[in-house]
Length: 240
Length: 259
Image 1 (cartoon, rainbow over the protein chains, first blue to last red):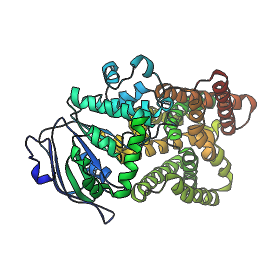
Image 2 (cartoon, each protein chain N blue to C red):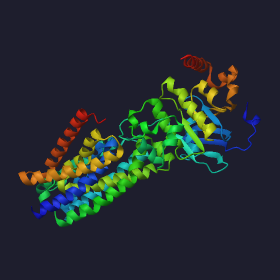
Image 3 (cartoon, rainbow over the protein chains, first blue to last red):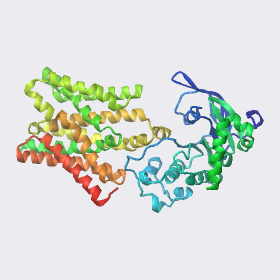
Image 4 (cartoon, chains in turn cyan, yellow):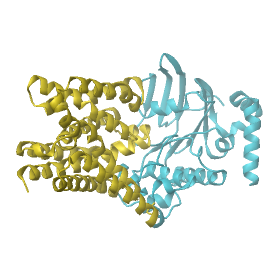
């Protein structure tokens, strides 16, 4: 399904002809898509395709050409791909308090964590899966409308990955949060997102994620090697 | 207890608190060597003050202020690591400072002289240390958030570049204030050692920042009192006391399994 066949009714965001140049090098060029509220949009593409740059644009952190139009005021929660807590003596409570001071019980419960067990823990003592869920808690603690998640499970073991995505899925359904996530995992994209935006500087594909079951489309987006690797990975995880 | 010792203790407590507190961020930012090297920049400023006959600490502060701005600008505009910039530029400042400082004053400039602390200096030390602590408290979580993730901080509205500049300027103020007590060679230790020690025994950020400030006070106070008792220079003794606390914290971490 292409951009022209998806009706852009009641959109939350419209991006038109977006371009970004960094160090005289075009990173994004002619990117157009829209975002419906209370849906999950997966952003896929090879390394250097401009996925994280797109997030920076949506956060208002870098200059761009073209237009990025939010159709109503939105509060955005963001979880970056890279973070470093190993050398910082900081507790979960202090980390969440950076964002806002409130009762964290409900927020932690929504990501499947017990506040009595985790609030006093040091961030560096958490497992990869626990850390990822704390980051989701951080992102949603001030009740955002939109959640940007850059490779949510890049540092998480396979057993914890589905738990993270189930958490994101449940947030979309129960809290009405619109989710944009960057992922390299075709299994994740097909099972946990409503729409997919495939980037490689420009838009390769924008449409419903269920259409990715078409092998020709997959090959167009990921290339044949990637399809094989992703399918093997997904099969292995499902049987685990 | 002489007036100079009282003034020295008052100034030491104020600067020790500010140095320990601001040092807790420096250690987290892995800028321990930067704090040490930055202090060397004060020496040419001291020397120019001595040569031209104005207050040498104003010269030191001017040089430290300029060094903080230059460091921030080069880091911001080139993305070089701060340690690289400091390694290249600031040891040169030390060399130039030693060459141009009048010989009779060189020892005091390098290692400080607690016996020459005046009432005015003590008042000035308190007057600069209190705002440094308050301003550091204001930017503390912003600095920590930016070192966990630059983008995370920016996404919550933290102006990372401006916060880093303010932080470096505050470090320059503390270093300038501490020179009279421990000298330009050792003042870096006043910033680094208390925080490095308390990082071993802190399970959260609040305790770490508080303990670093209190350890700064303890380090300077004990060092100054021991120096008065033994008739030895305060600067090296302050560093030795800091090292003893650092060792004690390491042992405490091992014995109590704090982390």
